[in-house]
Image (cartoon, rainbow, N blue to C red; front, side, top):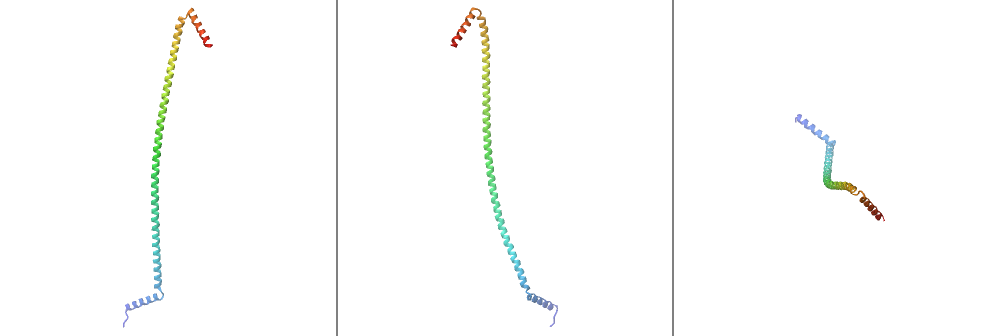
Length: 161
């Protein structure tokens, strides 16, 4: 039997495999592959946990967002209500102010009219007094004037008692 190169290659391979088996390389390879498989399982489990945490966090943020939106809507509604109340109050105050100012103006006009009437009456009374004085001065000369003065003095004495 003749040994050619292929035989020697096959023999070398068998010896190589036998040496590997003798030193337990296959066990070491299995252990390394098992470790890698365990690490991959742990990584997958960790990824699942992270995904669950992310989903929980997302749900929490969505809940917070909904709460914040509801709170913002409530604040806007409250602000609108307050703005309407303030506007209504301002309108009422303005109407009250206008009414008060109108009343003050009417009172000033009435006072001015009363004062003008009093002045007119005073001027008329002064004019009447002067006219009466002129008439009486002309008419009350002499004995008739003395008689009127005496009657006035007697009237004052009677009124004093």
